[in-house]
Image (tube, rainbow, N blue to C red):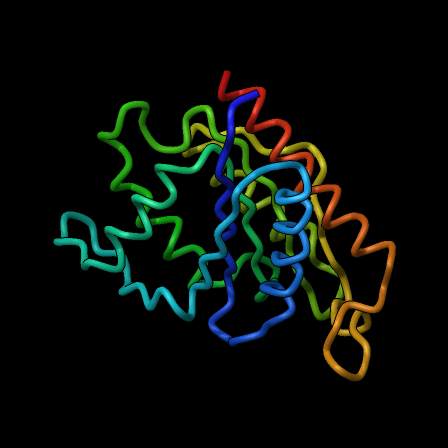
Amino acid sequence: MPHIRIIGLGGSLKPGSASVQALGEALRGAEEAGASVELLELHALDLPMFVPDSEPTPQVRRFVEEVASAAGLIWSSPVYHGSMSGAFKNAIDWLELLSKHEPPYLTDKVVGLIATAGGVQGLQAINAMEFAVRSLRGFTYPMTAPLDRAWQLFDKSGKFSDEATLTKLRTLGKGVADAAKRLSR
């Protein structure tokens, strides 16, 4: 099997957010499956708002090239008003720069999806992200991780305390890595 690289894209502007912590656990699963991984946190990327036909900044170019070089991705967004965060959607909009790549967009890339919700709408953000993956010609990994009431999944020190959730996130990461290996043949 080929060596593959998985990029994790964390969709919160809050450092140390639940969505980024969940993403870290999924990336550990991908690493355990033999993938090299990289976490791209939106607050650190500091992407400007997407404006069609505008000149991309150096941080936008780096972000887009990182995504282009990956065999697979894991996306994790907090749920804001029933959908993915605006910052996350903005990052996805910048992937328009991959339209002229060969292959274009996310063709032949598998994408795992995680959403962290304060309430019970995690699946709504997953659905919105899945539509975006499909429109970018990628494959959504069938197992997703909508984490409802995410604030209940952490102990007092801020670490995940729910073993079932940890297992689910690591299984998702491993599945994305394994699927990306198969698609990369």
